[in-house]
Image: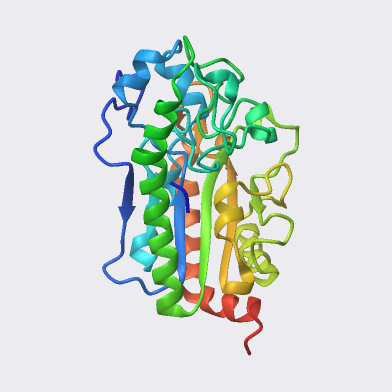
Length: 298
């Protein structure tokens, strides 16, 4: 793999480590959870280059998703979260998925500058926050992209690759669940509470997706698959069912647990967190069976 203030709860201008890994005392389940976009440690040099205040930058976060799934280790499941924000470095993109218009110097020819994500301003280094507002005051040197890959993107993916490799070695298979949130106020009316993304059946066995969907629906939530989110780089890169590695993306609607305007937890946070804890408890007891079914074992 290639190389605050009260109005801003949890905002932090220091990055002590590129990731947080909550590990169980002993991993007992062939499952790994990730939260790629919940980081809130904003590097000071990044803040010095942006034209936006923290409130606007935070629009790109999957706020509190790491907290919603924080009980994973108590069920024998590790949870890997990025500590830095998506607006600074997006680990759910290819390392070199970059917009050439953002840089002072020409980009190397091997850079992926033609993806629809880059064209929409949301490459590995985002040009805009998710509301479409430009982030930077001026163009960046390519050396800054190299630094962010080396110091942030790569360590996070190295940690994830180790988790997946160790899980497959220990259990014979691995299910990676990449956890995100979606701004329902910006989506079409009637969008479901949860979107399960498996790249239209390519990254995860259908027995697994169907079982997880049943668990979520049993709690009273509505669920759709792959629309409008089918999965990103994490799902695509780590989901290899033929190699006993399954990956799926979960998007949950932010209005279930937070105020999308103030970016504060709502009264629904505790209820959703308890529901997800129940889901994880069931995953812990059933995931091995799901993987056997998905992999064609009796």
